[in-house]
Amino acid sequence: MPPITNHLPTADLQALDAAHHMHPFTTNDELGDKGARIITRAKGIYLTDSEGNEILDAMAGLWCVNLGYGREEMGNVAARQMNELPYYNTFFQTTHVPAIALAKELADLAPGDLNHVFFAGSGSEANDTNLRMVRTYWAQKGKPEKSHIISRKNAYHGSSVGSASLGGMTYMHEQGGLPIPGIHHIGQPDWYAEGGDMSPEDFGLKRAQELEAKIVELGADKVAAFIAEPVQGAGGVVVPPSTYWPEIQRICDKHDILLIADEVICGFGRTGNWFGSQTMGIKPHIMTIAKGLSSGYAPIGGSIVCDEVAEVINACEFNHGYTYSGHPVCAAVALENLRIMQEENIVAHVQNVAAPALKEALDKLGEHPLVGGVNVSGLMASLPLTPHKESRAKFADSGTAGYICREHCFANNLVMRHVGDRMIISPPLIITPEEIKIFAERATKALDATYADLKDKDML
Ligand code: PMP
Image 1 (cartoon, helix red, strand yellow):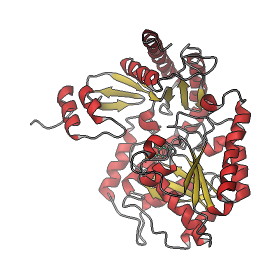
Image 2 (image 1 turned 180 degrees about the horizontal axis):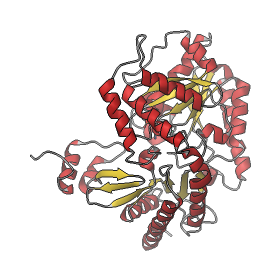
Image 3 (image 1 turned 45 degrees about the horizontal axis):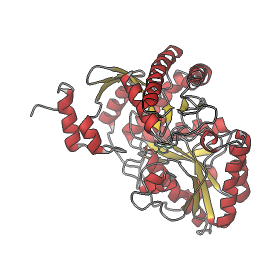
Image 4 (image 1 turned 120 degrees about the vertical axis):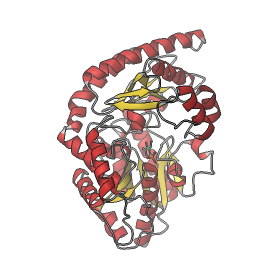
């Protein structure tokens, strides 16, 4: 057997992959028959596959490669840190410079009094931290029964037992006996899919008030926290109506409920501000971070915690942590990512250049007969596909149109993901208006080809 490198033929690599590699969120048997796409290199916003295709990555990997691919500074910093101190833990009264420096940098970047960081290896782990932290907070304050957590249907907060329980995706709960007890889900502010004839503003208010109804049902003295993404990502890029977040904030304040903003996707510039909480005008007690923290170059996540919660948690031994909490190489890479983002004014680029250009391109794509609307906040967006534009009707066979469109995107060297019948866009934040034009050309071709296929299948 020759060594397994990029030089092996694609079919051989695919056969080895099918024989030994279990992919996440995949029916592996079906994939094995077809063969996985093998990505070998990447630069800027483009991926190269084992067949030499150059693919425009309009998903930034999994919403994370905010800086774009191939930044050598990041690799250099990782190599330097590996040689100096590849690992040490932050348990048992020890620390190291990358963890100190990253915590300080995050405290400076985060709004208000979010001044304390508990590190994790991923968004899932960070949300597990949050679950235990908010329950511990209330227990330390003499209210152990204030332990229930309210989240939203169709939310995604991770794949571990705790974070998937916080999530509201029923198909995830069906596997593994989730959710764990004490977690409740209210409706999401998805006006496009669920708003019917209501105005977006009335619908936003109605969905926010479901939180108050749930708190009253459970008793405010039993509810620890509400968790939500400022703009829901994996649920289909659900941009809430303008009335939603002010009402949620009012309700959390009134009932003394901690607010956890899951910034795993929204954080670090995606919505045109450093954090989605700033875009939505909310004041969370805890923010979950991951993905864009290191632009996906190294696995790292965490919870940024406000003074009030940190003061209570810091007064006890919080029996929680991960071997890789604050991993020095990951922390050094994250610091370099944040340094480059600031040096190159990437958040301002999103707000002033890239987001307006994307909005213009999406508004044009929104005129396509297959597209029912445009959901967009900064550089995260979705285009819902519909058989009937005026009524925002859904396809009877949910997910087929989205799948067909995604396959046509691939055939046109474009990565757009589909969530049901919504096409999802979340490119690297460094994308230029010229690159957005190329994105739109490829997306139009994919939409046209999808339209033709759906006509052939009598789905339109
Ligand atoms: N929260 C949100 C909002 C996410 O989008 C994700 C990942 N897509 C997670 C949490 C989980 O992060 P990870 O995959 O790093 O565990």
